[in-house]
Amino acid sequence: MLRQLHKNFGDVQAVAGIDLTINPGEVVALLGPNGAGKTTTLDMVLGLGEPTSGSVQVGGLTPRQAVDAGRVAAVTQTGGLLSDITVYDHIRLVADLFGYGKDRAEQVMQQSGVTAIAKRKVQVCSGGEKQRLKLAMALVSDPDLMILDEPTTGMDVAARQDFWADIHDQALGGRTVIFATHYLEEADEFSDRVVVISSGKIVADGTTAEIRALASGRSVQADFASTEAAQAAAQGLAGLVLSAKAQGPRLIAHAEDSDPVVKAVFAAGGHDVLVASLGLEDAFLQLTQQEDEA
Amino acid sequence: MTAVPVQTRSTHPRHGISWVYTVIELKRAATRGVTLFFCVLMPIMFYLLFGSMSGMDQPDGRGNANAAMLAFMAFYGASMTAATQALTIASERPLGWNRALRLTPMRPWAYMVTKNVTSLIASLVSVGILYLVAAIVSRAHMPGWMWLAAVGIAMLGALTFGALGQTICLAIKSDVATGLIIPILLICCFLSGVFAIPMSGAFFEVLQKIVPMGGMVNLTLAMFGPNVTINDTGGMAVGDWRIWVNLIGWIVVLFAAAGLAWRRDTRRQ
Image 1 (cartoon, helix red, strand yellow):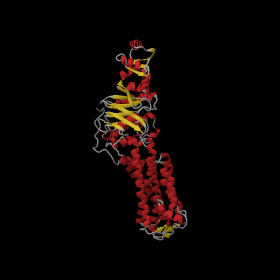
Image 2 (cartoon, chains in turn brown, purple):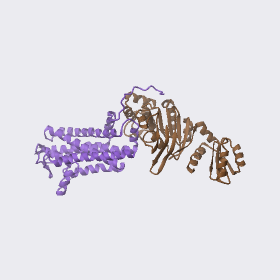
Image 3 (spheres, helix red, strand yellow):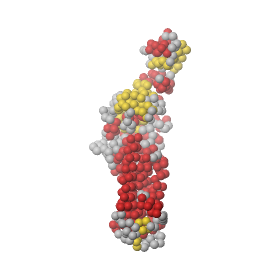
Image 4 (cartoon, chains in turn green, brown):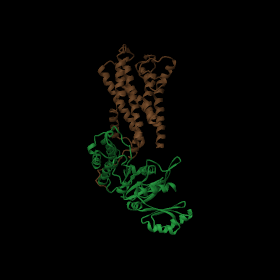
């Protein structure tokens, strides 16, 4: 789907080579800190930005063709609404642009739970109501692929839970979904697959269970006599660890079970060994920071 | 693949003009305070104010001075309506509305066309309300064809200042654009003699023929007769080249500028 995707803004490389294939029906979380390139990547999938190099295909179509055909739709982070018109007018307009009539507008309003606020102007809607409206607008064309770019930014915990519950119950059944988030729990709870990106690159890609394994494991760090020795030790740990890396003469490894790793590290000549348990937060930070330093 | 059966959809998504969108835009224009004040109330107030000054009922060429003031206020209101409609382009940008529209089959050019169509319709409404008041007050006298011709001139005004507004909104930052358009329009009004405030001297006489709106003033007066003047402006024949170069020239130049600004802007996005 995404092939060797690059995007530069002047000298800044926002997306630095992303290769990603997403299968129909998958719910994928794009997890990364602010500025990781999540929105830039999703914009290219939506045809809102052109890649500097590389290509994007949505079900065999270019992003623009996919948008025109109503195959892909999005709920963006903020904005995208006019404050002085009603909820209904927004949906009616999008329906009309896709060639539908009023009945389709009524239908998606019910589906996304905005019928009760149909006559309300957007300026008096709460953050949660606005996101629900945007969801309704995105559902109009009955897309195969739904993109949610940090859809719950600025919502409180209760509103966030409600929003996701609704998405799961009514909106997303059977659709392919890609959502960007920097809330770890959100990625963990609502997706089948988590793609962690940092500095415009994919640093981890796995099922939620696999990412959870990263999170539930331990980190083992040790110093070695030289960079070469640390690298040799890192290679020697294959099979025992989820990941192992040398940063200069320091070895950093993640493992489900740390005891055999520690033994192997001592055997390889490591000293000043540090073993620590990892939370989801730590795993995430570690994944993204390693990439920054490399 | 779908949870709910989807109703039949027409085979023609709208890449271009959507009447639903146009109606929504008109509704927005009708509920904006600024629009109503500058575009509907102000022309009516000025018309009643200037039109009741002494001497305005005197016959002057094919009509009376009151009728000339009515025609002035018609294109003033239409120009203001079109300019404030263009302002919405500047205010919608930071809201991400353009991005939202780009996730539909609507093309960016269709957005601009919709804005122009809306501004022409809204301008017609502004002129219509003014005419209604004028008909009730019944002080303006001119032949029927001139009432219609004045509507035509008002539409030229709407095109001119709509294009000017769009150029400014597309070319510069939105908060600055908002503050520029109405003052520019008011300066054009003063320099072209719409508010019937005397600006004498050879310099202003030349400037009056050059500024946007000068052509509208001169054509209006020319309709009343080749010798009709207000405060030294006017006195031209309907076919005078200076009138038409001004009218057509500004529309061509400003739409070209708007087109350029638009192309630069879409490339940047």
